[in-house]
Image 1 (cartoon, rainbow, N blue to C red):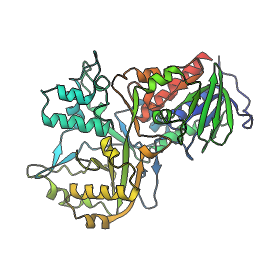
Image 2 (cartoon, one colour):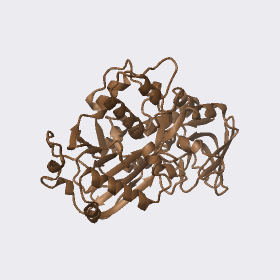
Image 3 (cartoon, rainbow, N blue to C red):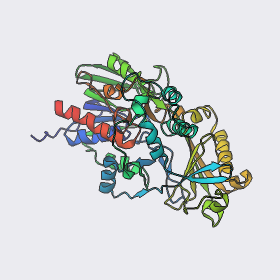
Image 4 (cartoon, rainbow, N blue to C red):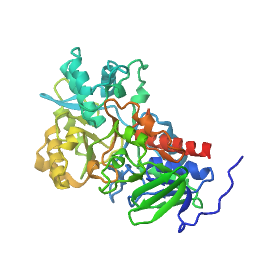
Length: 453
């Protein structure tokens, strides 16, 4: 039977069918499905804009957007590619080009995904869980090069400390080999916010109220009764709520900025949060006067003697640098280079002012490209920094599973008394840490409500 049309809710009364906390990809995906099923939704967001950990900025004179948050689509994600098709968003495939510094210059590298997968096949999925640090110490068959590779990917790509990341969670033992398409990386050319803007455009305005700059401070609940109190004292009431904020916010001390208090605190929530942690990330985007690295001979002069140029500067990987990973806007031709520091590298930047982070980024890039620092700074016309660890509405970039926490994402995704539901990338079993995982989780939470109403 088709859902009955509802009278538009009285915003002043703050009475809704469902309250969704957080207007990132998960919250928007949930609200889109709920309103499409005839339910009224109050969408509460602490920031002044939708998008959550998608932070797209556009600058006059810059041909491509600045992505300070989520940027890549890993593999041909059904969730993102379907939205891109519906919204007419152009998606580019990134070149499979990796360079790393050696004593004799920059040297092309094979895809690190394939090399890392050969290591994760050795990781255990059963028995007593242990940290990646313990796994690496125990596996004497791995060469020092393989161990350094594994450590750099866990700390950088997964943004997780080696002594806390779960071996069981990263294991691919018994899985079929990944296809090249699974390891392919893509970018939404016009900006990742095109995905969240499309989700917002799908919300039924008669059934959905979006409330920005409305940080939630407390969620009081009992079966089929939820009262959400915001920082300014306003209260919203509904029979159910979907909470989509990052786990870093759920784990924050009650008195801290952006934290949310639950009354009562569900025991299952406490147990789930003990097995998940937020990875730390700082990101810097540098804008230059020109694409100086594309000048004829620039890369060739910096490659090792045995290397052959492939014509593209895709990724630069330097495991011990202040910013260990860099990438260009390629295949787009734009004078942007992005630096990424994850895990311990991000910890080393904690508390530094943006200008100091910029200085470290420029020094790193100048060393990698064998350039005079003054010359590089002279080509710089703009820069953008975001430290996700210091962001009170995220407290990290994305989640990873701690030792012993492999069941935590599924536990967090489990509805509580048919009243509290949780979504977000941390609840996605197969796509954690990604926008597609967040979208899938929001739709899952909405489906759980619609099917049981």
